Image (cartoon, rainbow, N blue to C red; front, side, top):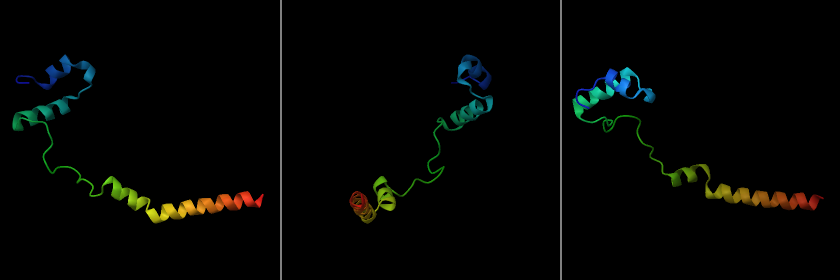
Length: 82
């Protein structure tokens, strides 16, 4: 990438839709740090919940069991009413 500027890159890759400011920002990162990766620790912190924790928060075993029991009782009641 040495020697390229935003105008040259936009001319060479017109179908990409890159903006001049975005190309300049990435080129500056490359020149300053030799990488375009984000800094460690930047951005929103990762969630502390795993998928299993989230399942237990939204669908506790007690509620699933109670819901199944309620559905069975509803079906029995519905069929015996007719």
